[in-house]
Length: 185
Image (tube, rainbow, N blue to C red; front, side):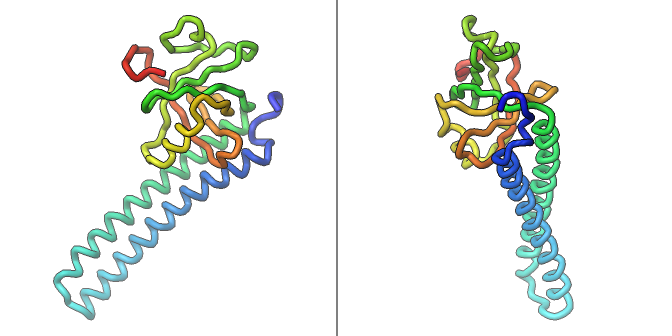
């Protein structure tokens, strides 16, 4: 498993498809919201002439634009994650959680990863990171894997793609800056 790139595994492709489908849902929802707002505005002006309908139309337009932006960002992130998964293999790591921060502890026999943690003992094999998401359900899902083994695929820029058995989704992680803090794992 270690010598083949992550993309060659069927579970990885299913996880990527789930991630991309979520982004497509946001994009399609945003497109539907914008289309609804435009159609209602034309109908309201020509036929109904109701004054209160304008607030609903503006709200639908703003929510649609938000959905379009979120979906487009998700699709761009999905392409980036795919490029990482096609280049590097999965590496096993133990996940530690402290608030919004995560620590990935790689096995001692694995390739040493430059750490940025506070513990001198695990510094060479540990990386502190945070999720590249603000969605509560996504954060709670990852926190549910606290003190468990996860699979991590490193990117060239120091970020990571995370998944775990049974997770059926991908999560982007970005490394934390080298500074001490209260909530460090």
